Amino acid sequence: AKGKMQYMMVCIACHQPTGAGLPMVFPPLTKSPYVSGSPERFAAIILKGNAGPFVMDGKTYNNMMPPQEAVLNDEKIAQIMSYVRSTFGNNAPPVKPEVVAAARKKFADRTTPWTQPELDAWKD
Image (cartoon, rainbow, N blue to C red):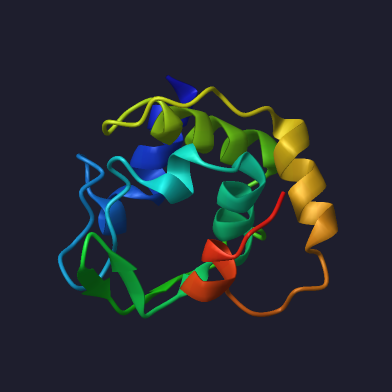
């Protein structure tokens, strides 16, 4: 419930109530490997943002997701991640705040958003 509330306050404008995103602007969270895959990678995306172009299901999205590291604490990010990983056609386990905290520390010096090639080459 807390994750859904946070999603509705922070993520809804771009990713929409259904998680379907906005065509050609913001990619969907529905059945997304970036959502249901590595929790560290998903946390890193939320913390540092990402910049297009981004191709999913043959469709190009070319916008920027702003970093949320200064806006959301680890608990709120974990709540959002857990909500998104269990809805919108995703079926992945919840995420603990410790995972987000570790990603925040690991990538503390990064000053740029992630690109799709970086995210696709991700190794945990």
